[in-house]
Amino acid sequence: MSESDRASGSPWMRFFHPGRHREVVVVCLPHAGGSASFYREWGAHVPEEFEVGVIQYPGREDRLGEPCVDDMTVMADTVTAALRPYFASSVVLFGHSMGAAVMYEVARRCEAEGLYPDLLVASGQPAPHCRGGRVLHRDGDEALIAELRRFSETSEAVLRSTEMRELMLPAMRADYKLIETYEPGRTVRLRTPLAVFRGLDDPEVNGVGALRWRELTVGGELYAHRVFEGGHFYLREHRDAVLTAMTGLVREVCDRHGPPRVPNTSRTGTDGPS
Figure 1 (cartoon, rainbow, N blue to C red):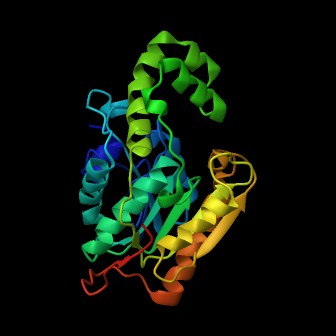
Figure 2 (cartoon, rainbow, N blue to C red; figure 1 turned 90 degrees about the vertical axis):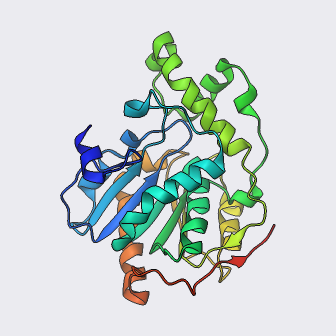
């Protein structure tokens, strides 16, 4: 078991820089095909009262031998269960791309249990109820590799390696099946403040798709909408700016409302658009 496993006590959560005060736990939910190591350095670049944890999906890195999860309900239920112990602190959920949709489903479940994060940050993803339909998970390996090339997230040397492709593609295919077969159904408006981050040149989400996240909030408004230079993986190139923006919003929310650390079962979600 790794140091990050020992710090979290859960196979689903990784803390790469444990030992902080843990007043605010920022939980990152990775993109399709992504893993916890994408956020490895984030914990070293946040203020002292923040600690960054990352959800590690099965089927990759140190969970390579475990079956991938390709169903949103299973994923969201399991991640929610892994997060429950952290609500003794203030909790922030940051989901990028597929991770933003997982974040929404997790937030729904948390609020239904009376567990309220301080802030939700949906990054690089249009609102779940207005996503376009795709079936890339049914295509051959070359289509998935072309998708990796499109976003320039994986080096060409890795993509040319037969061994690395055999390791990476099952998780990527499972993740794409999860997000492409995901049907929000009757959506629920969230009470937790919701911010949207995106890259200016991101082909996956424009201003219209980003703003439709406000339809999933009780007040019908976003807490913030931040646009950064760059494409779909703007957060890799502009990590410090992203962390500064996020931690600033968390402090602002806490100053205004106080951290909702104690479960309050009287606060329930409201039906939203279907």
